[in-house]
Length: 102
Length: 102
DNA sequence: GCAGACTAGTTTGCACTACAAACTAGCATT
DNA sequence: AATGCTAGTTTGTAGTGCAAACTAGTCTGC
Image 1 (tube, chains in turn brown, purple, blue, orange):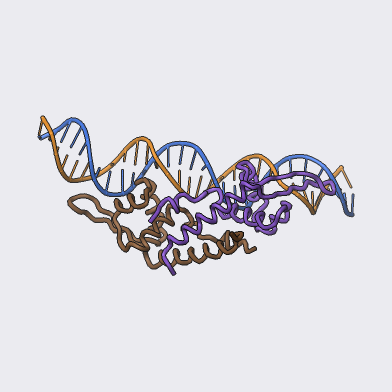
Image 2 (cartoon, rainbow over the protein chains, first blue to last red; image 1 turned 90 degrees about the vertical axis):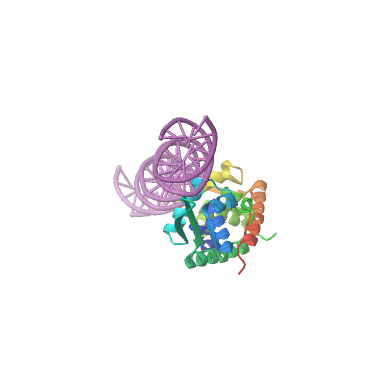
């Protein structure tokens, strides 16, 4: 058993809400806040704070503008975000292997 | 995309320290506290509190006794724990599938 | 033209959590 | 008897996830 395979999981990505956000962004290019809100099923508040966190650590980029005089927030995954996600996927695969076989 | 596949992850098992404990117990039958401490690399305090939590929800069983006049704590996974772990493994497999392909 | 409802998010407050440092209780050694 | 060791437990703290409440501005009905 290799504890570090499990304990080394990137907590930033491990959080389900953030994993979901990153996964959607990874496959969707650029996305609007409202779209992501519906897509993810997360509340606005929850989405907003995870968005901030992901932006702060540079895994996503956020661009604010206006459309029809209303605020519009667009999100996209960064290269760093893609790497973090891929790395997490690999970590997860390792964990799966360590788990008792079916 | 199915948010519930990700958001529905069992947080009790999702926590890396607890996933590690359950995984070790699943493959090891019965185990002593000290063994698990070394095996997992967790601090005594951390291990103790996760142990309590897992016991409280019935995923593991804990038996306290004495050996050579010293306290001895033995842990084993319960049937419920095995089910939870297997269920989590399945959830994780679904998540892996939802993740962007390599 | 302004009261009220709507839009698009952000901030705040709270309940919970993970973790290690500090503690406990008994045993062994000197 | 004082010190240290063993085997854990409790406590304190910093951090987290979440939705309710809030903000800032826009639109609608009257």
